[in-house]
Image (cartoon, rainbow, N blue to C red; front, side):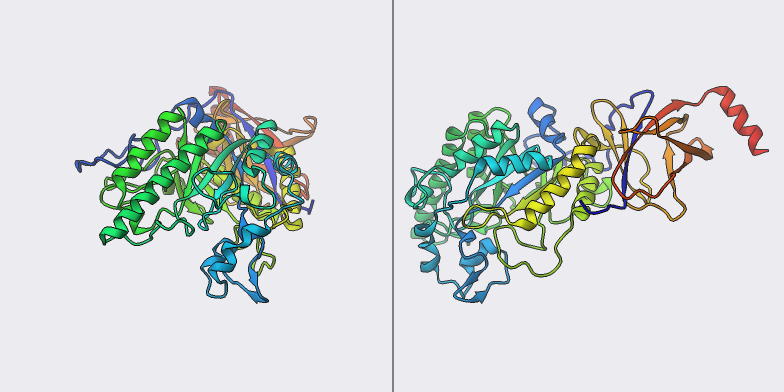
Length: 485
């Protein structure tokens, strides 16, 4: 693993702080606008399955389908867009693309190897593309012939993936695109003629049948991750989508659905007309991150991130900036520190191989997580003032605090602002408890107490330092006032 200029500090508070119930915007009440198809609940879900989702920390996204065969090229031409959109490119004839299924025979595909790599990286959930915009299904759906059953591979790749990830304890979520370029009834614009409306009704029935089929065939899946719901035709289906969601949730108690499945009757997506989050968590953080806790409005959320700028499915030629493991680990830390999960995307090629660049990143992140996963798993917003050196997370179950440091000051000292009435008991390396760290109190007030942490050496490898906090007693207050004078 490359040398990293950050470390993890682990802060254990003597008295476990209650979880922060108040977030900016979280107390906003539903307005007086009456909605039939708006948010079904206000505030965070508190059931056990949602609590598990909330505490994942790190997840994996896999984009895999027919688009992995051309890999961003066709007949010697380079496609500059996201690889899974190549069918929409003028340089890719639709007929050529639609016959790629006849070549789909991923001889290197090993679902167990994928799952083992994800487990070693530290992922606790995976989102897998069951069907992208092209309409090709990696499971043998009985509602279309455009499935893996009619490829040279023939086997149910989705079942292999679900079984493999279940076996290593990684929860599975099923990606499903509402867009379907292969179905004759699909339309992006709102249907106008009688024929268009009739055809779109067949598409709606087809979509509902496929979703019910997925929940039936893969009963261990914990949730559905939707894409392609921005089309005007689907946005206008508020009543249908709401009814379908109710059916799906009845089929699978505890089912988790993000905010991009449906719109309300006024066409509002993610947040309804009253500003309330639609469904269970916000999916608006795609390839971007919130900057402050106020940006998430008290909602659950996750960030889905690509390694290059905008490549999800396999593209054989990455251009532009490619993120390093250090950048990705920092994004993960920022996500968790702001009460979210971080999901890293992988795009296996047409043979089912995860590209070497992604495998290397997975290994480096896994090396880091093996040592420092306590700062990520079961953690969230700490409620302490952020410092320039990095991020602070808090374990939701134990109340312990972790300082995740990426920018060590030239002085070699880190400043932390603790809660009022709280001091420092001791600081020590988690892996080597005998290694103590010196601290210096620099300011005390009703707003909080500030301290310097003196590092002995500038770290070149990630490490965890335990901070045991202590209550400040009356004698220490007297000594502090005397020292000031």
